Image (cartoon, rainbow, N blue to C red):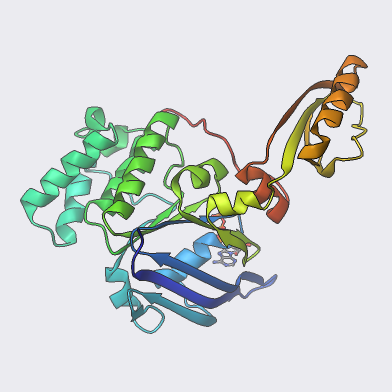
Length: 319
Ligand SMILES: Nc1ncnc2c1ncn2[C@@H]1O[C@H](COP(=O)(O)OP(=O)(O)OP(=O)(O)O)[C@@H](O)[C@H]1O
């Protein structure tokens, strides 16, 4: 169940002036409702951080409106900022503190009672499996632990809107899942969450609704299932190529995307049997190393919309 809009963005435009001039946001519409996790997915340079910086008043839009729970965030950025908790792309330095002290400090600054802050900090440290580092000086914790600490600092007393800019960078796959549970929990508690990511799998697992951003424009916005349905009836053909041997695709293959030693294409499902025969022949003739035919994924939709693969890795350095 989702509720009232906590973020409404309409016709947002921002151009960075200067020698080359970049149209970073070019007419963006976006909504986040209470109880909803909305993903903003795009390549490096797509305009995600520019959008976030305008929502929290760090960058002034050229055109368009931003409303946070009814407050005009362009006219009253300080007021809007009090309604938003943001985990920025770069961690806030916490040297001289421990993760627990840093989380508690932010909770106190945001005005919560000391006992509530202590309880919430302990709950977050447990939920993210950070107990072993909770009282370690910040200078000695790994990048993953620092990133998770930053998440806990952001959400110890969460605003109506919670903005998370690449929260899982540097976080190991196991704690990444714990973090996703916490993100889901924020929405279930009635907060609106805007999750900025370039990781398609993260988007697929966590979000209710997804906006795909490319060169400052929202190319598509829907649920992950709604976006994937665009390719219903299609299968993805992935082939490992033989060095120096170009792929001679089956005639049913579309949108072929060549890659280093691995290439993909889309094929209609009614051509599957024929394509499998073709692929087997190619392997037997030594023109392909291997092949796989799978249902189209969100990643396939993303590549079709935006043109080249985003980061789809699950692996990350240990926290
Ligand atoms: N302060 C700035 N001055 C000039 N150009 C900028 C500035 N900040 C960002 N840009 C440019 O605006 C475009 C959008 O950048 P932005 O940081 O919003 O993208 P992003 O999607 O957040 O990328 P990333 O995933 O790498 O953080 C890029 O071309 C970037 O080089």
